[in-house]
Length: 382
Image (cartoon, rainbow, N blue to C red; front, side):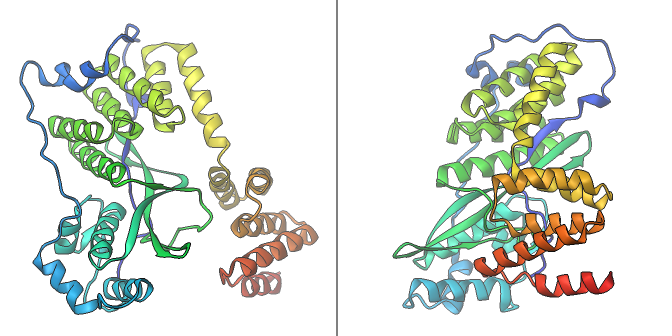
C-alpha cells in the first residue's frame, strides 16, 4: 500500500490577502443574512444555480461486494472480520491504494484505488458496515498543517475510523500511519457531519480550480446537510474573498464563528480581511484571538518546538515543550523531544531524565517506540 504521510479531511481555504495591493476599502456590511450568503447574488447575478443532488458516498457496486465475498468471511466474529478486511485492503497485495488530493466516494475510491484520507475512510466504512462491523467516523485534532495552492492557503485536518467490537472494546483504523498519535483529542461524528466534510472538500477542490459556481454548489450542499459545520461557512467566506466580495466574505466568516466560536480558520481569515480593509483594531483583535487559540493547543506547541529544534533554537523548543507537557503529561513524544533539546543544549543530566521518562511512558502504553535503541545511539555518538 503506497501512501503519502499527510491526508486531507477538510480543505479550509485562507485567501492570501498579504499579496494584494490597493487602497483600503469601505467597512464591510455586517447586516447580511445567512439566506443572502447562500443566495450568493454577487456570484450568480439573477441566474439560478441548480442545487446539487445527494451523493451516496457509501454506496457499493457488485465489484465491491465480490471483493468482500472473496476476502472476508461474514460468519466470523467482528474482530476476525476486521483483520480480514484490513489484510485484504492493506497487506494482501492485490489491492493497492495510492494517495492523491482528490476526495472520492467509497465506490470511486475502490475503482480508482486513489484518494485522500476521507476517500479511504469512506471506502473502509462502507466495506466494514457491509460485513457487519460496527464503525463510525472520527475527527482527530492534529496540529495545523498548512500548504499553498496558487493564491490560496490550505489547512489540513484529519479523520479516521473507530471500530466498536462490543463489550466496551474499540479499535481505531487510521490510514495516516506515518503521523497518527493515539492520544490526540478526537471526537466521534455522525454520518451527516462526515457527509458535510465530503461536500466541503469537493467544493474546496473546485475553488482551487477557480470553478467558483461549482464550488458554491458544494458549499451550499454542505451547509444544507449540516448548517452547524463551521468549515463549510469558512470556505464559503474564502470563496467570496477569492471573488472580491469582501462584505459577503466577512459575513460568512462571522457565521462560522457563530456556529463554532473556536473556528480558527475563520478567525485567521477575518484578521487578514480586516488588515486589507484597513480596519486595524478589528484585524488586531482577530489575529490575537486566533493566535491565542493556537498557542493553547499542546500539539501545536509541540509542532512549534519541533520546528525550533530543527532550526537549532533549543531554548525555544524547551519553552514550547514545557507548556505541552503541562497540558498533556502522558505524551512520550513530548518528553523525547524535550530530552533531545536539553541534550543538544548541553545539559546531559537533564536530557537523560526526560528521555528516560519518554521510555517509561511509551513502555506503559505498549507503543514500542524503540527509544532504548535511539537513546543508546545518541549517547554512543556523544
